[in-house]
Image (cartoon, rainbow, N blue to C red; front, side):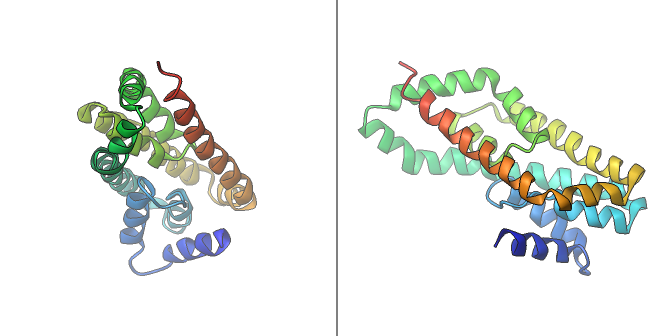
Length: 197
């Protein structure tokens, strides 16, 4: 299934609406979609290397806006669903303590997740749920996503097809590591909450 989803995402690169598809994938990946926009960015840059920086800009802007959507999911769905449940079980204070600690280091979390394979959606939602300063979140997201996508575009512009071959040959490893990081992120959050007495 993952390969089919990946192949479908790649097929968008050859469509007439490839730029819009790139923006759409970058947007939803920051809040819900499991496939990173790099998989679409790579073939598009290889097909039109003179547009590498334009595609990086599109990816960055759409990803940051998608990150804002993730932030809103964390801010509003947390209040509607998770907060009453935590309060019922007596974990309201623990979450407030966790939120204070997260907000102390939140800009670093956004920067690290935005550049590395760590699922950015986990951080965007956590940032909204903990009430991380919105300007801090936006600036950190712009910097992190800009570094990520401009680095990919720059490598492709400079080295071309070998970079694509590397990604495609190691697709399973890339997603295994991403999944492990995703699960690890949730485990860390789970164990930080009860232990924050």
